[in-house]
Image 1: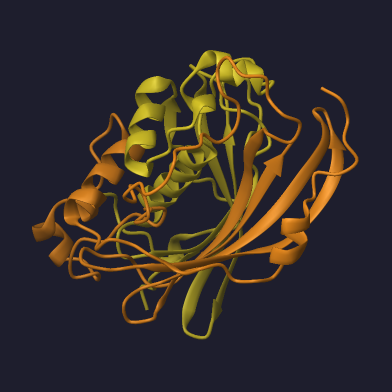
Image 2: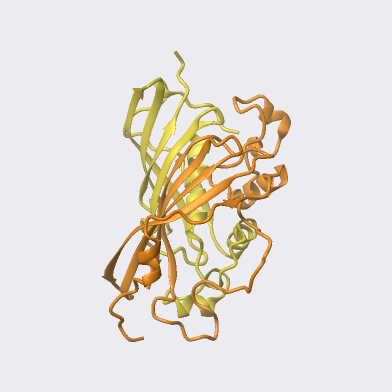
Amino acid sequence: MGAQLYYEDVEIGQSIPAFIRETDFMSWNRYAAVNDEFVYIHMDEEAGRAAGQGGAFGMGNLRWAYVLNALRAWIGDEAEIREIALQFRAINHKNDVLRTSGVVTGKRQEDGENIVVLEVNVLNQNDEKTAPGRAVVLLPSRG
Amino acid sequence: MTEVDTLVTPEMEQQKGVWGVETVSFPISESDIRKWAIAVYWPETPPRLYWDPEYARTTRWGGIVAPEDFNPFAWPVPTGKFEPVGAVPGQQNQRGGNLLNGGQVDTFGVRMRPGDVIRSRTRLSHWEERHGRNGRTLFSYMETEWRNENDSLVKRRVATIIRY
């Protein structure tokens, strides 16, 4: 478990620690197993080529999980993730080293909630931004 | 492959805005949550909140909760003929037969917990066609709502499905 983050500790422009994974069939197959996601394009190089993507490729929703993991590690167990939005703009190829990014773009207190907004993404080893999006988290207050 | 005029089908026109049949999950188990957490954190040890009941009891949640992206609808009992989605090895793919996950927007409500039974309903919200690098490409937007056994909202999702 990570340390607990409080609303007062967050500054606009602040970057959050990255969640980093080298992805291949070891990670994709585990995700397929729990999500019952047995789709040929994620399991078979020929099917991935037939789909015009060069080979088998990873699930968008596994990148989704990586962004959630990065947020969860940063905010701590007492905080909430309220919203997340990603566009899957580029393919996750085998052996890509993916790393999440997150930058605080806003914070406000509204209706008793301590709201922090972030711009998030998942980058590959070529610094290609594969999944731009945003997230909203709710943090406890020290007050 | 030859270009087609549209990938929009008459069935899509009929289904636009209409909620589909509600589906109901099997009860969520601690083991389902633990396996999910192991998969998405592999090869790192997942957070204790997802697998250690003694630790989870000390948090504001009072027990194990599922990661926000946990899918309680995985592994339904198969009742019909299996039909693979997307490209299949050794088969010529039909125009419009390729599918990609284009992304999604999720708004989360209450957490999912062991014992919860989740109900889901989905509708085709709207769509748009564009010309992309793979020719005519259809972007469909599917809206899904999940509620637990107390009728509390667990998640609202708007997903983008890309077909080309």
